[in-house]
Image 1 (cartoon, rainbow, N blue to C red):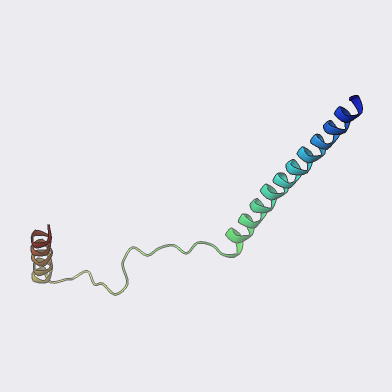
Image 2: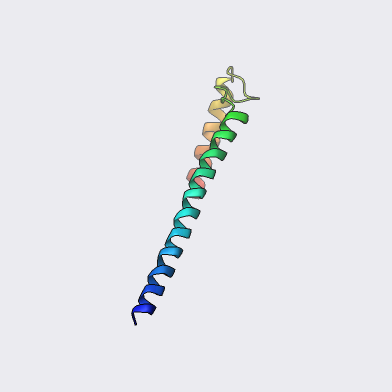
Length: 77
């Protein structure tokens, strides 16, 4: 019985060691990959304006769109 317990503990510690090494390696590789991605592919800053939309929209157009949305919501609710 003692030999089986010893064998069981050896197997348990070997399995736990392999899992621990794998998870440690996984964390290290993810950190290295994150560093490489941030270095070679930096995030492009977003512009403050939306492309294709001008700031000088006519107020009558905004009023017409607002009225159309209001009527649509009133009709479909």
